[in-house]
Amino acid sequence: MIPAGAKVYVATRPVDFRKGPDGLAALVRDTGADPFSGALYVFRAKRADRVKIVWWDGSGLCLFAKRLDEDKFRWPRVENGVIRLAPPQLMALVEGMDWTRVRAERRRRPTSAG
Image (cartoon, rainbow, N blue to C red; front, side, top):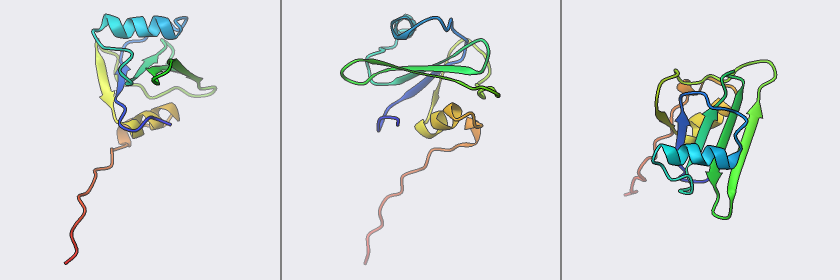
């Protein structure tokens, strides 16, 4: 479950997947971001079948890792940089689905009766 209101950032270039949570947090710091902000930072391996996500949950640095057995994740085009995803898009990416087809739900203002 993604924490409510969390920001999600995806590194578009593959990283060395031998890195653990501290090494990935160092990569986040190297870009000028704060790995302890509560945002989720998503990393991909050279082979598109693996993902790692690192985030600070308020009490410790967390690491989520997943490898698909028979498919590849649908990653953004490899470029120098970071893109931002909506939490529902991250959930689709982690499930191996086409995250580009997922749109964040817009909150509607309540209408007054009367």
